Length: 433
Image (cartoon, rainbow, N blue to C red; front, side):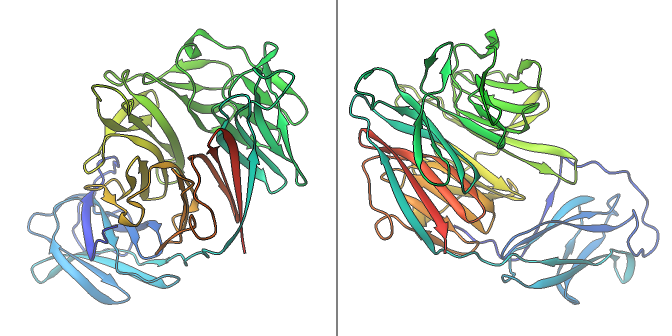
């Protein structure tokens, strides 16, 4: 991964502020303000608002009372980016605007504290679910708590009904149990699960668990024919599903609506993730879209942003053709591909390749924070990023397998990976020591 040294100033085109003329030095207020946007382990992002650009003015940025740099100031609403920090330290920033020897404005002081690194030390347990009568796999997983974990997929292990799959497994704190979740009387291979609470768990968009019963949901025409690959949302009255042929749909608790973008109908949508942005009061939601990797004429790749009823394409410079997963928190975005992991800070500039993981096809990326990120992938690859370094567990704590982890969930000090091992389904549970 490349490390950007120094401070970069970039335009925040998505933010809109009212303008106020800068006529004298100001302490805080609307005229010249600095706000913390995100602080990671060695980086901090601050939003700078000047109201307007004063021609010929110079911006000076100070950290802990010492000037870091000065440069011509050309953008009124910008981001100050500092990547020269150390973990678990506190820093105070201030900005000043000058015209020659005259100070035009002085910002408020902003104090930030960098995250500490997290521990790489985990205890691992491997659970296999034989599937002797068909190809078995688990595709997705949800952690409600350490005594309530679900994974979904297909496992053919019933000797009396060899054609009928178990489509879920559940951990109750003592044992893993095979489950059959039916729709219209029959189980089906389940590809996606999302848990909003212990009593509000969705299996694709068709069945909801209320803590006591599995409730079958009506299937509108809008959901038929695309398949559901992943789910993300805030509640069962506000969530999205994605699928094949560029399919994106939103559920508001009573009805479904489709969100479309011309030109994505040839794409497989492989993952969706979102966070709530406290500055805008809205969700930031991103989707990875790719060609079928086995298509004779691949159509490429896209990273999409969902904004209400619209979809925007964002920067994909540096990314290879097939994207499998996306995860982010604050300003650092992680994308998994068939050729490793790529990282982008704030979607600025080119995506940077993590050469530590360069030889692995990535199935899923999830994390708690930017100092606690997990990756699962082909041949049983499992890795952890603690904010400064990567650790690969496969080949040391975990064995290589003939299969891929495509399901991954993280909750505090517990991580669960789900996938396939040859013809069988497999789960790996890690607990931080």
